[in-house]
Image (cartoon, rainbow, N blue to C red; front, side, top):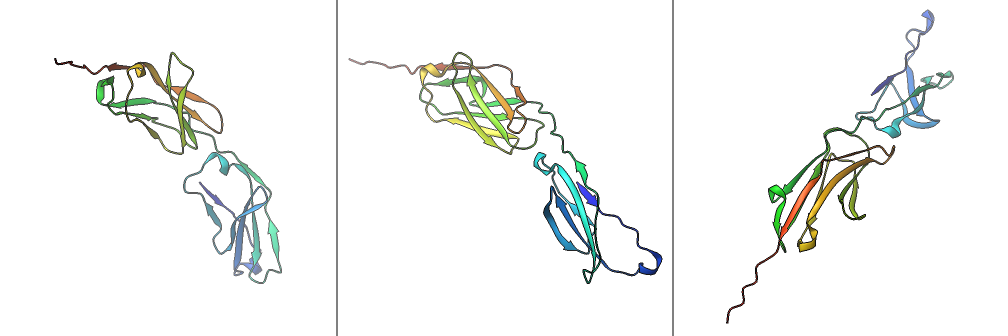
Length: 179
């Protein structure tokens, strides 16, 4: 996002060098400089607000401030939740390591990723401003099997999206007793 501060000088002041500063909600976001633009490379929800620019001449004897301009950054709708398992297929032996990669195709801002078992109220949850999150179970227990979902929630707005149900099957280890 780029905000530009335009001004028209009277004909007898056309050669006057100007300095520009930018403010969001009254707080300075860019100090005075010769650039009449303020850039935000990757706008986030928290970049929303009332923006103003202030213009002054080199001596500071003439200062003017623009009217506020409200800019609202809208969150991209969450979409495309997918789950990848290692080992693939959702079948794992008790005691083995299981890795779950939960990803979202589109989303921005701080996201909360939850890996939840359908038959219980417990979820493993992690927050990050990334499009994927890894959950690791170092040693799967036999009772870990069941139906799971990955739920991604945008922290700022509370909107969420869920993956399809993922079936995890845990096979017990065979104990052989030799006499």
